[in-house]
Length: 148
Image (cartoon, rainbow, N blue to C red):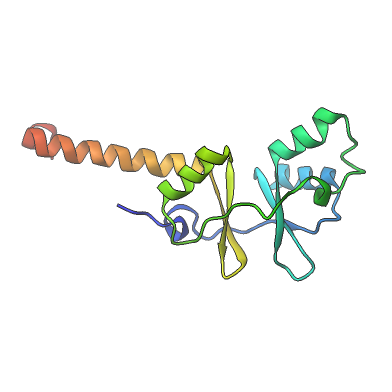
């Protein structure tokens, strides 16, 4: 089965955005307060300019000994990140994440961010699909012995 990113994997998400001039410290607080691992950085026209993740905070700020209150997210964001569309499959998103070593991918439709998919979201879906496939195979091979 080909589950779509929206609505099958990330239904009804509230996307958290920040302008590029926001201090990294404020972005970190937003992530903690909303239990999210990434935030979308938007330009003045409301379109996605980039993305900042927990990994960006640790590698581009903390590990370099920079002050998170004096560095803006616009300075450390990943500009023009890879994205997926709402109709893309979990497998397509997972493959992009595997190749590029991402943990989060913005979901974009008509130039606007409509969701954020994480590797954790995709793991759950792929696990369910694999388990269902195993049950179907067992039912086919062994018949009703396994309660099919």
